[in-house]
Amino acid sequence: MRWSLDELYTSFKSNKYIQDLGKYEKLIEEFNVWANSRLNDYKDIGVKIEEYINYSKSLSTLSAKLGTFASLTSSVDANNEVALAYLNKLSMMGSNLTKPNVKFQNYLKNIDNLDEIIKTSELLKEHDFYLNQIKIFAKYLLSEKEEVLISKLRNTGSTAWTNLQNKITSNLMVDIKLNDQEKKLPLPAVRNLAYSTDTDIRKTAYEAELLAYKKIEESSAAALNGIKGEVLTITELRGYSSPLEEVLIQSRMNNGTLDSMFTAIKEYLPIFHKYYRRKAELLGHKNGLPFYDMFAPMGKVSRTFTYEEAMKYIVENFRTFSDKLADYAENAYERNWLDVEPREGKIGGAFCSNIHPIKESRVLANFDGSFSNVITLAHELGHGYHGLNLKDASILNSRYPMPIAETASIFCETIVTNAALREASDDEAIGILETSISDAGQVIVDIYSRFLFETEVFERRKDHPLSVNEFKEIMVEAQKKSYGHGLDHDVLHPYMWINKTHYYSAGRNFYNFPYAFGLLFSKGLYAEYLTKGNNFVKEYDELLEATGKNNIEDVALRMNIDIQSPEFFRASLQLIENDIEKFIKITSK
View 1 (cartoon, rainbow, N blue to C red):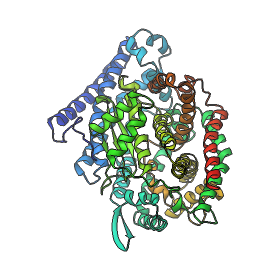
View 2: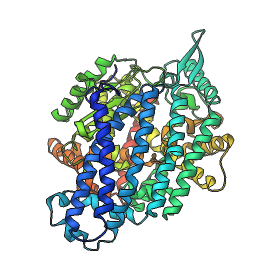
View 3: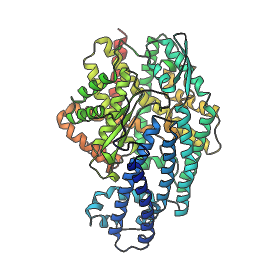
View 4: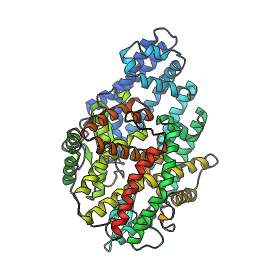
């Protein structure tokens, strides 16, 4: 149940790691010398751009290998001081790339005939989109000295706050009384109790979780204030109207697409409220659903899985879509690419890390045997499959924007969920259907609350650092606006801002709406799959491959989808409404 990182490095002391670290350091020095000597005139422009691309590919490869090994090691052992030391060292080394990169961005900004130059070289044509993206971001560059200073100060600013928050949450042990026994459990294990079939256990876990957050609320608030304050300062200096504008540009998404999506989402919120009220009624609540019962299992899905059974089930159902997808998941399992055991010092939640230089991926999860956790594994393996379809691309063309990142993962969730529904009894179907709706509610309704929360936090942080009470108040108000009368307003989750790690990354602002986009885009693609059958599979793989070097709107147009119209999102939300109506009808018999 633990992953192998030997394919990267066997240890920080291994000759391979030490040699690559030395190569990386030397290459950074060479890159700086190159920038100072080669970017002073506009002779042989095409050759110089090719040289820049080759340096960037080599540096990105070494950085990905060294950094991924350190971050993956730290993610399963927050107390590993060696891993943390190397993360800090790599961050400081990386700050020495700022100067040559800024110099090149400014160089590129002043080239008026860039498109003509790109046509003269196969290497440049391969990196056409990458180069034009650099030119777009060059408009927001500060002076070379300012950019270098910001890069170095981040090591003692947002990066330090992020590391602190990761450490205190990973080491947070929750005091909880279960079956008349006092226990200390890791936070992820306690949060998993929200899926328990026992009402008292769900409520006890919720109360214990909130009480545990009090131990770290002040330090978490300090970290969040520090990170959001830094983001506001830098985005304003660069000339962005807001952090959201910067995120949209980074996401390769038009504001019109975001507005269209939220227009449709707000129209459909009452449908979700209707579902939450019905679930509350079934559980005996009169004032809406209390937060601790949000994930209460319904129906009779009592089936549990060992890790081996879960992976076998996923592989079998992936194979109904394509052998390529199933073979990827089977290979990941057999070669120990997954770490699924909950334990002290390991971060909560789940993620997938695609490691382009070795054409592999690693999945972290906290598996407890529930069907919900099986879906989580399918989700993260979907991210890995996305990486598989980009494995032969240049590393500079392998990075896709946040909103499109959730497409393959949610598509894989849908494959497994629909397979489970097909073979389920009526009682089991209620449970599986409700789990699917509940997950959709998290990605639509809860994500909307997180978007509202982060928007308000940025607005207030312009004026002052926020207190713990302010963070709690903003979170509760966001939940009320998003969940409406679907939840019991007296039993919400005021500490959700501590639980969600994305808030604590200066490079992942508004990492909430991409999930909603991913769900709705994926729902639309799945509808296409049901229509086209096997003919869709090749188109789908090509779409995933195209995500590294296209804007989101252009990726969608490959499937003749106009995502700047609310109609597309309404159609996807209608599919969820159909499930909700089905759930209400079945449970009303």
